Image (cartoon, rainbow, N blue to C red; front, side, top):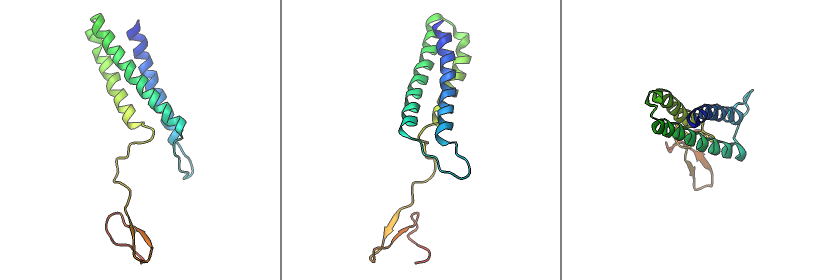
Length: 121
């Protein structure tokens, strides 16, 4: 019984992680969305609950000798890891770091992106 409840709970937690991601980053008409503190805390709590539920399902299956169910638990575990990485709040940055700022002797600043050359002076 614990195995079934934890398995269904982990699937629901994955859905809630996705829902939290949409709440944090779904914007329309060119608006910029940034997650607030509540959404970041919600993600962290859901991530912890998801991992705990996946561990409980696998542990319960081993304890009860239900090895044929590992296919389902493996699928849920892989989906949970993928969801926690892809739907992270705040998002994991896969791109290059922010451009570097250069300050000249006259006090002007230029964001070069690391090239050392600024267009237009």
